[in-house]
Length: 305
Ligand SMILES: NC(=O)c1ccc[n+]([C@@H]2O[C@H](COP(=O)([O-])OP(=O)(O)OC[C@H]3O[C@@H](n4cnc5c(N)ncnc54)[C@H](OP(=O)(O)O)[C@@H]3O)[C@@H](O)[C@H]2O)c1
Image 1 (tube, rainbow, N blue to C red):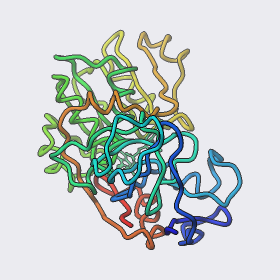
Image 2: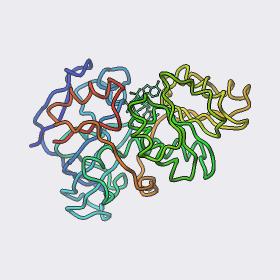
Image 3: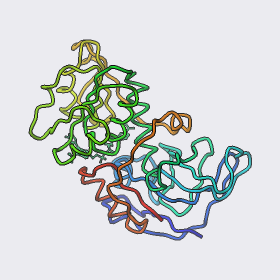
């Protein structure tokens, strides 16, 4: 048997509860991972609340980010050995089931944990880093020498997006409240903007905007793009912009709908520093959700069984 976090109904964070269920068995091409840490992302809270019905009706177990140890190999999972330290984004947007003591994962979605990351740090990485990589480099085409504005730069996605942008050789400008500016500088951010007291549209023009806020930020951000520049939004529910509006302004718009699991992309990431805002026991999943829902965390929140 094993402990998991489950919910019988959608609702606020208090619907999350611990249950005892049978430990799953890995099938063909799968491995059983003993969970060391499971990252908590805003999308987890939307699904828990019923705002985003990715998993259908409850009961279900949330969690797409995992880091841990290979406990058992399914048939044909020759990539790994029992005891390997692994991490990955599981099955997104289908059920990942990572808020648990053990989880079954496709071997093709797992990579070996980078040795510089603790298990808690690695559990925080996959969804945010794959989002930043696939959106900023894949869709935005960010290259060396370009200037990029990253919104919500101290958040889960933002704090890895700025590091990926620096590793690409870009000049990076990040928005965050003033208390987080030293943190952003420690990640290599070249220019910081206190969005609460400073108008970010006053910066010199940029080639790329990475928008992790959405709404009215998008239209304002488009005004700081160079002609032909690109606005990449990861807020499909409220992008505040459109391809038609981009065409009128002589810029490009890329709406990044959803991150895709990819061990190959994990292998392309630069060496990342991971900021853990809170490490929370599995039994306190509700607290972890409330922290993420505050939208004030710095870096990431992870659950540990
Ligand atoms: N499309 C996709 O596949 C995809 C993937 C991942 C995430 N997302 C979405 O991207 C968004 C960000 O995700 P996340 O995990 O990075 O969230 P997060 O970690 O909860 O973001 C928290 C951070 O946002 C900052 N912030 C909030 N409002 C801001 C504003 N107006 N300007 C600048 N910074 C602001 C906060 O800094 P301050 O305290 O300084 O304000 C805080 O550090 C979410 O809406 C999420 O759903 C989409």
